[in-house]
Image (tube, rainbow, N blue to C red):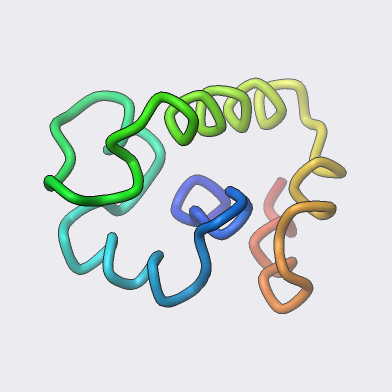
Length: 81
């Protein structure tokens, strides 16, 4: 579930995340591997870099980073990790 949230990225909240999902941007790989809809917050290097950084933390099993960045009502996404 963690790879399907963007709320850990500063500036992206639940409303923006829902708009991204509705536009077909459903996961981190969608941002990194394919074209994203125009005028979305993922069209900049900063957000792409945050996703790449998130993948590094996930691959190294460091969920503390996500616990620090995610809103508390989204911590359920960490359970599988």
